[in-house]
Length: 138
Image (cartoon, rainbow, N blue to C red; front, side, top):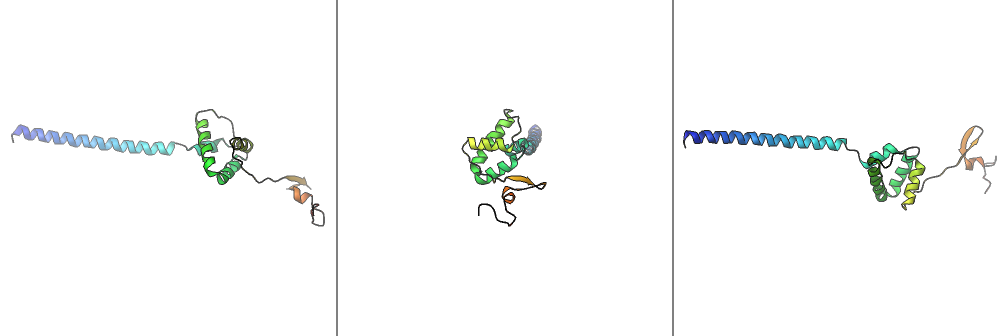
């Protein structure tokens, strides 16, 4: 092997090492960028949670418990609409409940009727109890 061939081989080896180092650095940057992007991206549920108003979370959690698969689909679509800017308003419990029912998901909530008695709010059942402790329908 001549002197020029040896020098050429050394230059090739240096260039190959340099290219491998650059490739390795590019892969590291891609991984770091992917990690940063996944940390910064909100899920559809997080976008929906940011838009919930009075009793909205209660309705959402109840729907998730009663109809997990269907609710997941609704949340995905709501998230897309929020990100696209098509939904700007606050979603309170009533609006969210109407939305679920309009797409055929009958979310059942516990209903309580409270009335004021002696300056305090009590259930309507307690309000109608006689002094003897029996309700009127017994």
